[in-house]
Image 1 (cartoon, rainbow, N blue to C red):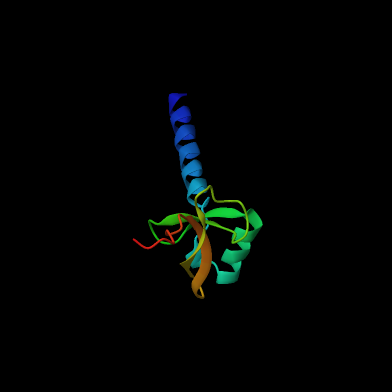
Image 2: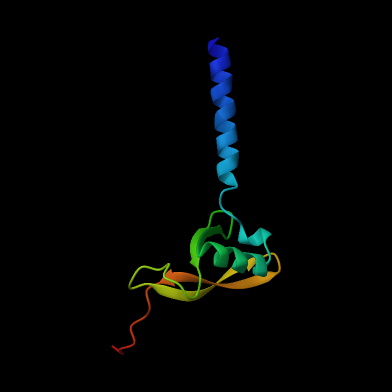
Length: 97
């Protein structure tokens, strides 16, 4: 009986780990148009951009960024080249030092 419980727990952990691994879309496996459409449809999305890198990307016009952050242009790798997207960043001050 305990062997069955251990096997069941191990199987449940394997299923959970493989499902969580697919939870974050990878921009390198999508075209630029697919990446941009995904961000537009979700308004904001956390996307993998490399083996150990990810970030949150947002629509250009929306309220997904908390003040004082604003959507700023960024580029991510896509299956068809570099892709322009937006992520929340604090804007540089406009007053010279």
